[in-house]
Image (cartoon, rainbow over all chains, first blue to last red; front, top):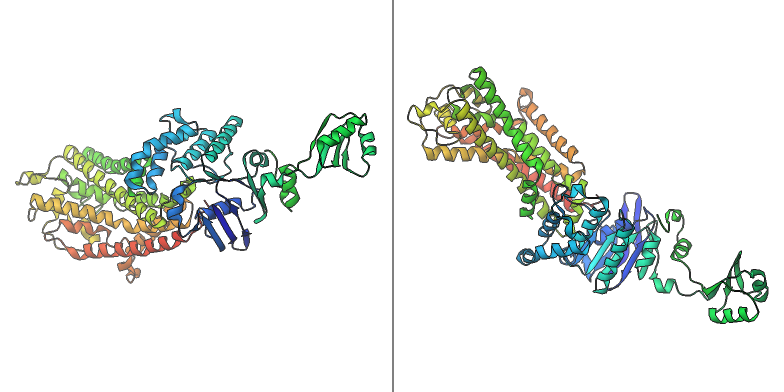
Length: 305
Length: 300
């Protein structure tokens, strides 16, 4: 769906994006992670033909960007950094105007009202009426920005920091909306500096660090069991003695044991008369994964805001 | 896209406030003249103003002469300077471009919307000034000599008809009496339309400069002020004898040539040059705007 090859963008002496090979497949919910200033927004803008690459190639839906933006972008919905609207017009008027600015002619005009209503419904703004956008709250503006990305019923949604300005309920609505759209076949490409958001939402992850794509894989692969079992036990000393050499890490009552099968280990410990309060296969969190691949500047990444 | 730009123009409060304010200045002047019956002596002050007491129907021409040097170009510079930079500041530019709207198309649509805006202001000034002129300053004396005021500019036509052709700048002094060849209704309508078209076109040079600056900076204020600076520079040089060499190429050089539409016969030389110089400015600055905008990284 999105493929880039050695994509590079330099602004004068600063290299914002450095030889990035992005690979987003159809049907993915792809999360692009990286601290602020790591090049996420520049990358997103290049995919949409707003910023021209210094070198490298971009293909979206199999067509070269920016040469074929005219054929590609009508099938793409985008939220780029903050949403934007004409403040003195209503949300509905803004969407209608934005839609009219795009291609499509008479066919688009005929379905416009229906598509605008549908988009407002999807983001939970159906009842907002004629109020001008300048009277909207931050969260409502964000929802309107999402609606603007949806009016063309896109095959690909590109969302740059979509959770900004949303309250917890808004974030949950957004998550449900994105998953729902993805289930109907819409590919999602979102960028975020919030690890938790991406971890809950995405099926595939890329990590940008100082303009380089330092990691790109399916979340399921990244979070595959590590061949270790995490054990919480009040009898930590005895367990460590029993499993001598297999305990990799100990932190109070919490042990990390090199062991294939959590159930078998549990049976063995209980059989030896040791108490177990919690046991399960060990998985790395996305935070650990990201921190392990990012260098300087990674301290800007937080698992929550 | 052009329709979209026009909707944006017409639904923006700023458009109507600026139209209202531009119409308010001539209205205010008319009120003062009505109360005091003082007008500049012939040959001094704003064009046509000395004659409006004799003929209220002359007032549209006087009103256009009042708003042309400052009000109109300021309004045009603000609207054109805001066109791209303003969208960049609010962030709507990037959303328009990913619709997608072609960058060239957007520029052309912006220019057309500026032209429509100028036309709107000029027409509003003409019609409100005609109404104020007739109601406040009294009906045309041309009516007394068998020339009913058929429309805006009628008196102006009568007033200037038969005058010896002079350079546009000196035209203010040309209104000395209402004597001269009378113009038919058709002629007056044509000439008024011609003058309105000429004034609109006169603003395009400034508009193109402002539009170009608007693609360079993301500050609407910066591009509007830049265009105004160019305008002021041009107006200074036009009156400076030492700058005679460059005067034929200045955007404001032929601004007052619209008065020549009301001569009998129409004095075409400056009008043609005026159209020509504006065309050159539009082509040059639009090309520069296009070259800059179509290769620009949109980071706003």
